[in-house]
Image 1: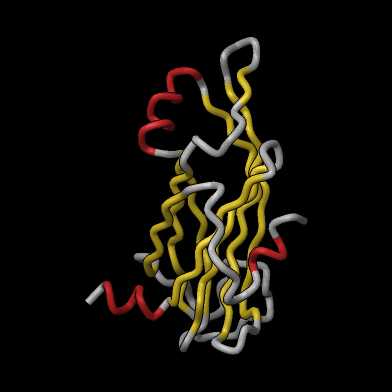
Image 2: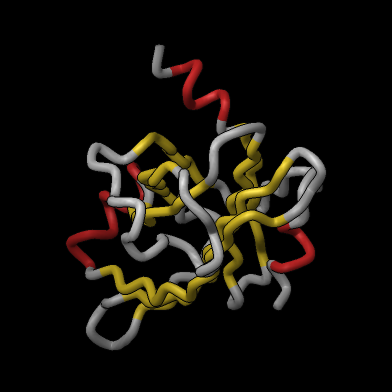
Amino acid sequence: DPLRPLMDRGMPNFTELRYRVNVEPAATQPAADAPRAGDNSALAAPFTRYSVNFSLATDGLTLVAGPDGVRHETIEVAIVAYSQAGKPLNWEARPIRLTIRPEQMQFAQTSGIPFHFDFDAPPGDVYLRTGIYAASSSRAGTLEIPLSSITIAGK
C-alpha cells in the first residue's frame, strides 16, 4: 500500500495531488451504542462524529477517457486519527472508483471532484491525517490537522 507510509503522524504533507478538505462535527451525533464510522470497532465512547468532505483537483490525475467519453480513475483515500503521542485511535482507508461523464468534466476541472466520509474521533488532543493516492499516476497528497482547530474555528 503506497499510501500507508505517508499516513504516519507527523510526516510532512505531500502535495503531488491537491485537494481541499472540510472537517466539521456532523449535524447529528450518533447514539453511544451506534456503529462506529471508521475501522476501529474498539473505539470507545465518548467520540464525535465528523463530516469530512473532500474536493480533489483533477490536475494530478490520469483521467483516461473511454470510447464513450467517460473518464475513469481509481484512488485510495485514507483518514487516520492520532493521539499526540502518535497512537492511531481510528482509521479508514477505501478505494474510490471515479467516473466522470463528459458533461461533468468542466465542473470537475474548476471545482474539484467531491466525495464524503463520516468519521469518528475521541475527544482530546487528536490529530486528523488525510491522504489520497492515485495509482495510475503514482501521485499522493496528504494533510494533517489538529481537530482542536475545528472547535476553535467554529466559535
